Length: 349
Image (cartoon, rainbow, N blue to C red; front, top):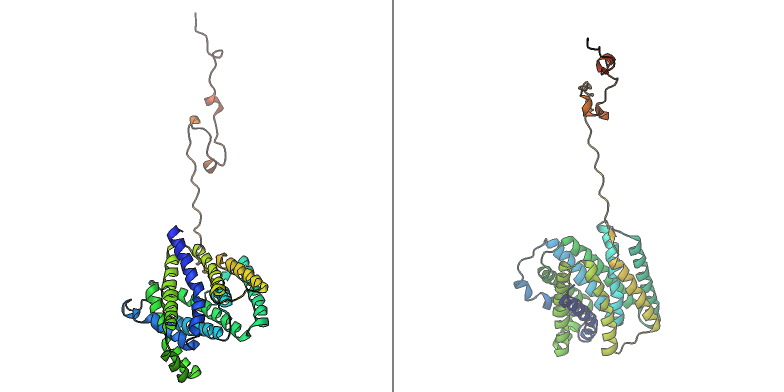
């Protein structure tokens, strides 16, 4: 990768890592489902009027919009609202690489190799250690919801791969338009109209800035830049930079929100990041194509009669093996004998 593109990959990881701190700030102003709906509303409008018509089938846009927008971000925001720390959320969410591999194995038939299976096991061990640490000091429900958000993210990755959008910006903008109405309806149903109106009436620069950051910086800039790098370079060259997301997430949460990191959480971070690294970089064995049935061959033709080899002069050397005669030709010994000088009759007188 060129230095400018390396800087872009690091910048995207930093934007996504700091995004968890911004989400924590935004949840102080809005209920989680309303905040998620506003995020996608601002990301989709007015961009849908400038990116053109969708360039993939509508079913793929609706599927990604529901799974990623409603499933992933709805579960993530509710989990963080329930008490899941921002830094730990940025770490646990990276287990999406494991769920992406598992979903691809079930849906696309990709068979993970032995090294990749080991990496997934190490990452899941890190999740278990983080669960023990969070269970001793925080709400378990928030932890479970963030893990569920990682599951939804893995599913959306496979759906996006199946859709294969030719224009990442066009696809992301239209996918952002899908979850707005479902999230608003869920917010009115579970969070209540009174809470939503109170949050909107008390909107200030801090809340507006949080919406703008998660909509434009994290969603539009982040995903479009990442898709650009994946189109230009191999995934094995780009994927390792995603491991910087929890580094920026945990460090920014410690600096800006004062979140502490326990020794057990450092162990979980080491296991999770190491397992995700192996899972992301290890190869995948493609499923073998079923062998086609051999075509019925025509019966072999009877062998042609073997022609008699032509005679050749002695100067031509020995016969080739493929044309050697079955029996030696008869040779007249008297004709082939060269008369010697002694046998010649003497000239008279």
